[in-house]
Amino acid sequence: MNDVKCSGGRAACTLVHLSDFHHCRPSGVGVAAFRNKRLLSLLSWRLRRRKEHRPELLDRMSRAVAAEAADAVAVTGDLTHLCLPVEFDEIRERLGALGPPQRVFVVPGNHDALVPVPWDKGLGRWAEFMAPDSSRDRGRFDFPALRVREPLALIGISTARPTRPLSATGRVGEAQLERLEEILHRSARMKLFRVLLIHHPPAAGMVSRRKALEDADRFAAVIRRTGAELILHGHCHRLCQAELDGPRAPIPVLGVSSATATAAHPLKRAAFRRICVGGSAPDWRIEVHDHVI
Ligand SMILES: [Fe+2]
Image (cartoon, rainbow, N blue to C red; front, top):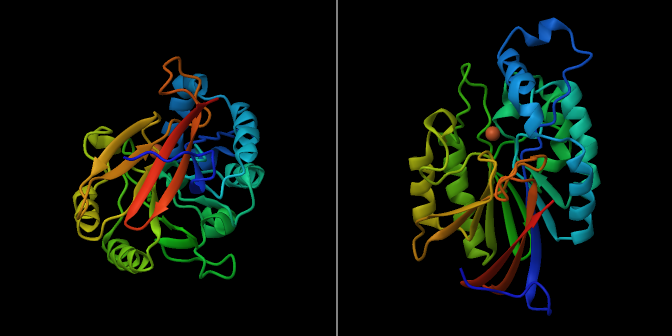
């Protein structure tokens, strides 16, 4: 990865990445809402995870991210914890604090699809933040969602789907992979800096099998053929870096910690990343800055 200075006027644009709010709001909800996989997530919240996440950190995070005035803000899923309609509503407000929907781009995580929820009570509440440029209303659309913010092509992929209890896996699926390949080829012809947003890490060995991307091999094969300039993910709750093979050079795969994490370890504490992009195709340069909250 070559360097480019964020300051000094050489960066073409800046991108902020944050993830995994795990906003949990179980109060005021009838017991019927928990006669499903939500019950296990509620138990894990009460036993362990509520000590690991502090919702008030999101206020500090929002202020810090807004102060960056980045060209784009990428948010890679698991914004709710129990996939409850009230959580989707409250997160909608939080996303608004990060910036306008035209600038803030979201993909869902496994917790945002913990159980099936009607579109208008769940993910549809964030439609403006997830929609591709081609979507004109709050109706459903297909992923991948492409947003062109020159020189960036931001490509949102959904790996979120309900899975069996104790599983936190994700899947891109054949239809999405097919469209992804076409979008990546097209945006390469337009000489754009292609950034993929995906919740589950697509590189091997970053999470356990219980949390893995099931079709990571198929995803990696697409990337090997088409290339991409950068892949951003959440899910592993730590600042991390890996690579996937591209047609010409390795492609950086960057993960970020949970935006509400209180961990003692600096790589697991709440943070966002600022990524400066400079140069032009095919000689892009990026510089990555970690901001621990
Ligand atoms: Fe996750």
